[in-house]
Image (cartoon, rainbow, N blue to C red; front, side, top):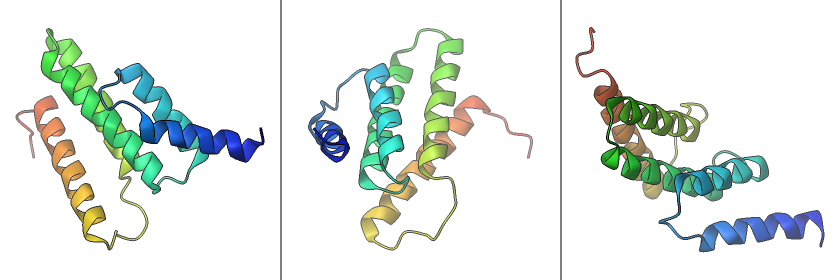
Length: 119
């Protein structure tokens, strides 16, 4: 198989991946897709969104405060990668909506991590 065929197969597997997959598997998929595609591509954005969703699911089930904080920082870091505030603003309504949801999640995570900001 050619390099292109291998890359296409990886991208197809992402499309067919189970959305209830574990965080380590989604993390690996996200890193792989980041190497293959440009940051704004659907593949990178979708893999990142799935990863954030899985991390937030784990956050809700975490038993200790330190585990909650670790997961919150992890989700926040993925959100920063997905929306680094660079480049032109998205113009399609779905892209604008997706970005707004990410910003909302990031704001909630920041508030969780620092409930009494000193600003």
